[in-house]
Image (cartoon, rainbow, N blue to C red):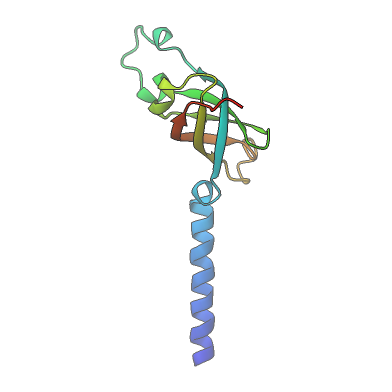
Length: 126
């Protein structure tokens, strides 16, 4: 009887952690990147969105493409809908969290989305 409870409990834990790993993959495997901002661009300029057709979603107005060179020299890129990126300028240093697409999304696997700005500061001269 104890063996059945142990197996049932073990199976329940494996299923629970498997569900967490699949459902929250991007958060579990998020990458912290510290480095210099090489480029930051709005994906859609706000003045091009004004026109007939109703209100424009904030996600389109505050959509950015971000590139940061980390301390090892790797350039990490991502898209983001975070309004904090609106004040960032090229050449500043930042600490950001990059969220990866899960590998089962084959068309986007290995890339990042939703770069979250954690800290922005001036780079110290070398």
